[in-house]
Length: 283
Ligand code: AMP
Image 1: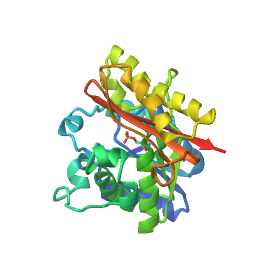
Image 2 (image 1 turned 180 degrees about the horizontal axis):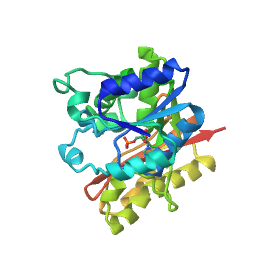
Image 3 (image 1 turned 90 degrees about the vertical axis):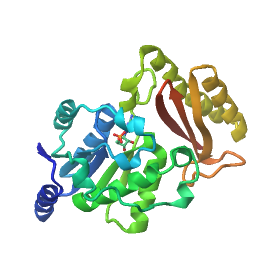
Image 4 (image 1 turned 90 degrees about the horizontal axis):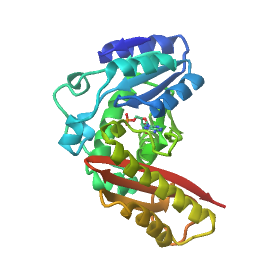
């Protein structure tokens, strides 16, 4: 496995592979890797000749400076995980090589998909995500890029961004990996105390209750929101950031639930902000 910090070296290696006819898969991450990231890497390794992973805590996408400064880092362990699942190259750039001359002032927006959820409560977040991805996509020139559906809105936005800007690349969404109790794996879970972990389980519990209600035939979004809200409000130390029931393709609100429905929640457990979602198909 090759580990590189320099974008020019990255380009050179990738160009060599492409010259040899290899198909390339790419999974961008911010590190502190877990089995959720591992699922993206394994999927890429099974569908491509070469897999590139980037590990970069992107300052441009943090709207909360404390969240950025406290973001956990574990490079040695991360490299072991990458090696174990068949990653060929890990790109570990520093801030200056990604943003020589500083973070540029540019607004990359897809208004249609950036009206609610994280786009609303984390202003500037997706603009920062799209900025770093543009730079990485130019450097890696992958055939396929892998994104977790845990960050469902990000997955939709990136898919649309790549289509609109004509990056010749397929965006592939990978299902959320959870711990045995249902908690969606996240690098931020490392910052939870044991009691906070219990509270954090309420997110996936609420989503599953909502899913069951829909499967039993409920078509009123307000009724589903109410159930989710009851579960989340059952803990006084959990603060809901958002709770939405939306069309899973357009992220638009629905009067009556139909088609593919997205249930999405974000909540602060102590100081840690967690997100989770599920989609339910109504037939
Ligand atoms: P991050 O390092 O949090 O920026 O995540 C990097 C990629 O891994 C993103 O595409 C995430 O959606 C994905 N990811 C993070 N957690 C999970 C999970 N539990 N299951 C599946 N994918 C995940």
